[in-house]
Image: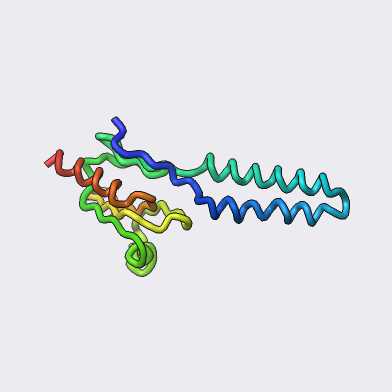
Length: 149
């Protein structure tokens, strides 16, 4: 049973930046053919936008696992969970980051959740995951930990 699910899709701002490919190709190809330039610009924009949407990673928490992108771990190995946003999130992604940590960052998503791992055979000390709902994700992971105790 899925307890939490989130797809880390790009923000509207990312799509607006990608939309700049339309005037770029239109102006670049205008000396040859204005309709061709506009068509190529729209085609490139559509291709990039679809790629961004399709390749967006998913965070999913079930009763037995935590999945962040392609990484999966059993919830039995989830230790303490902390949610960060603002300056605290930037510190977690920067100066306080352990190089051994597993990371799923998206530049357009500021908040992060830090999930400490209790698996002694895993050299990864924690996962740091971008999320738009850090409190909700942390709450779900903490609730699962308490139910196992």
